[in-house]
Image (cartoon, rainbow, N blue to C red; front, top):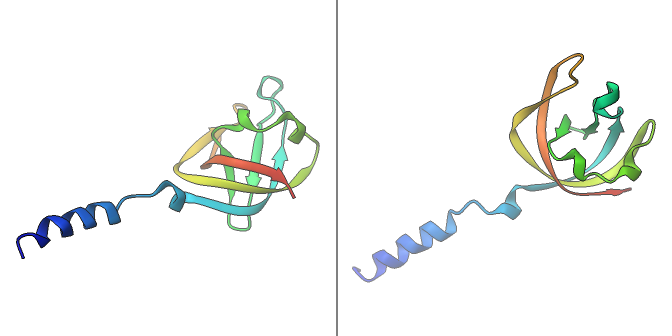
Length: 105
């Protein structure tokens, strides 16, 4: 029995780890471009069926997505469990996400 205890402890430690792939979510979404910040725009917003989000890393979104209106996209993302402030002219906060990938649908 004494030989089994270290094995069980190791198994619990490795089995209870917070795996990064478990945090990555996928969704069909709408990507909305509102303009560049220097000209009073508010950057990108992402709307899924559950919520509206503000990506923390919107600079990583390709410029080809900067179009008027909305774009249907498929995203892989991670919830940040924090809000991100946006729009200097009318400050407000949205749930933040970290994008892992984004592609046209």
